Length: 471
Image (cartoon, rainbow, N blue to C red; front, side):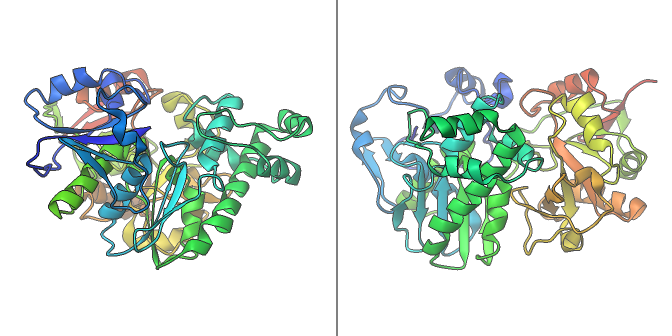
């Protein structure tokens, strides 16, 4: 995996108006095929672009750049119109430059990269390679596949971990696993293999989560060089890990698209900063704007009342979000007070595993009343204990929730809807999950209507209009 920025010598600054994952258009999760068709359709007059390349031989350029190995965050390789940085540099640059911090530690961590699997960058930009010590991404992906969830399904395993128990024998096996990039992870002995084969999926997942936090505490925490940390890479979707960082850092920042879906932004931002001395922060809502005219104008108070009455709402607004989290523009919304709502949505709408939890979107002014954490979480990136028994619909079996804090500046209309629900119920939050059914998150109004029609959603709101099920 490596990253390149391709463009003309004038190094024009990207305007930040539009960026999007290809899977939103191909409708195939984790899909990178059809890239040229996508660019031809959406950018027919483009003269430059940033692209993340998935493997050697796909880029069509000299492989000289692959000998480049950075030791500092702002190192780069450039020849003619090609600007190249390492896979993990792109993660790190995207997170740090988006954070607004003047200085920060950075953890860039995922399954595999080109030179690294995991690196730590201190406040001065110095890179420390942790690839041999912290092999978390490889382990999570291997176990998600071995336990039947498939590749790139670590999120499912993380949800399952809450149902399991800690097993020191499993932990010992994990501690001695051999994990190297581009090779299959292996257990150290036949006895360890037998332990893993006989253990429950829940206990493996739970112990893997414990092991993850232990590795971070052992190898990352001692490297702390300031009071801020940015976290990026696929493992940055591990909300338990991110919450652990709030215990030793004053501010923890995880960007909205921390995985490989945000790499092209990171490469561009790195180049723009180094070549132009410009810090470009991409929009959180970076998708296209779609015009839609319906038959009935929407009333936010009525929508909030419908949620309070037990209805499940498809909520489609403006531009879609960056990353894999629905942040209030492509969401399914419901009442967090309903103890049965998780099972209802998983069975009749999402059509997925029954153990998968749902997140609360909570007004920022009230999150500390309901959740035991010390800072906002605007991109649904941290998992923390729930302090209230009033919101069972968004409380996981282990008493935690992965929250999204919402203020009016971030998303005015979504904030106003939650506030209307608060006025009706006294609860300043709604259940929020991504608007999809066994597919990538919906991107267009047509996709939203299709998902509305084929699931048990009660109401669909698209921008200023609403639709209802008949009968």
